[in-house]
Amino acid sequence: MPKILIVEDNEMNRDMLSRRLERRGFAIVMAVDGQQGVDMARSEKPDLILMDMSLPVMDGWTATRTIKDDAEMAKIPVIALTAHAMAGDREKAMEAGCDDYDTKPIELPRLLEKIGKFLPDV
Image (cartoon, rainbow, N blue to C red):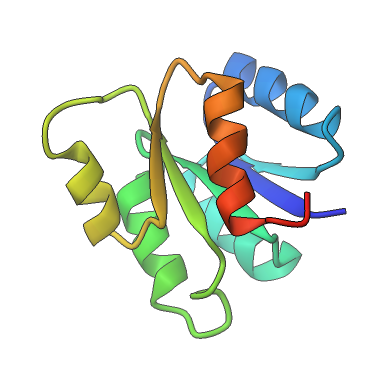
């Protein structure tokens, strides 16, 4: 069962996303801020990370860079989730080390397709 780390400060988004992904056979672990996300990525070793970019304590950009700069975590795919669908945001996410990018509100079929690129056996 593939493990996904959801790093999201909004409880409603976290709850909705975790329930929908669990129903599709994923094991879910969650963090509520960027620093906790980095710590959980290190301790839980998820197969994929869904990273909100607007987070307290440490933002998603910095958290992603921290994860990608660590040899033990660098290969974990990170999909950026952001409500900021502005020109240049996708490029900014990729520069931070994200492997893909998706906008909020989340459209589950589209997100599952992106997850499937990194976890093809699901």
